[in-house]
Length: 189
Image 1 (cartoon, rainbow, N blue to C red):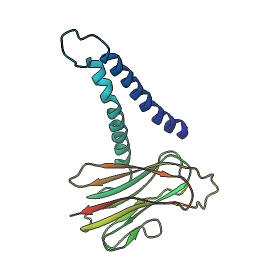
Image 2 (tube, rainbow, N blue to C red):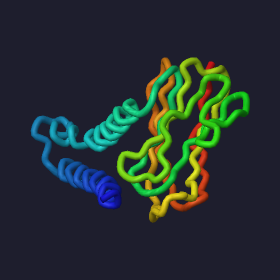
Image 3 (cartoon, rainbow, N blue to C red):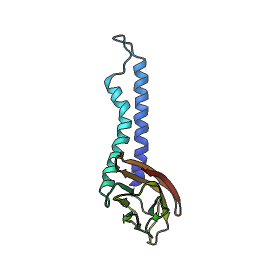
Image 4 (cartoon, rainbow, N blue to C red):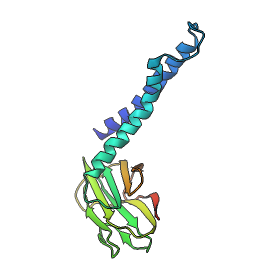
C-alpha cells in the first residue's frame, strides 16, 4: 500500500506537468482572439495545481505531526508508514543527545513518543518547552529491530515546529538497517 502511495505520489505530479505542457503548447498555437497572449484561466489554475498538491500534502503531514506527543517552543516529530525501527535523534547545543537510550535531558528536552516496530502511522517525538539557545542537530537512524518484523525501505517525514517560525517538513529516504541520515540543523536565537 505504501509503495502504491509513493508511486502515485510520483506519477500524478508528472502527469499534471505533462498535461500542463500539452495545454501550454496548444495555447501557443491558437490564434489570438483579442490580441493578448494570456493563457486561459483553466490553464493557469492547472499550472498552480502541482504546487498546491505539494503544499496540501505538507499541511496534512504537519496536522498529523501536531497530534503526536507533547509540544513546546521546539518540537521535532518523525512520521513513517513502513515496517522498521526508525529512531529520531536530536543533539542539543550542549552536545547532549536525546534518543531512545537517553529520552530526557537536563535542559528539559524529552522523547515522549517512541515507536520500535514501524508500520502505518508510526511516530517519534522530541520536544522542549523552553529550548536552550544554540544549534541543534537532527538525524535519523534505521535501527536493527529487536522484534521479528520484515524491515523495509521508505520515506520518512520529519516536521520541525519552532516558535515564531513556519513549520518545516523534510522528506528523508531510509533504505536499509544501520543507515544514518542527517536531516537538518536548527538554530535557536
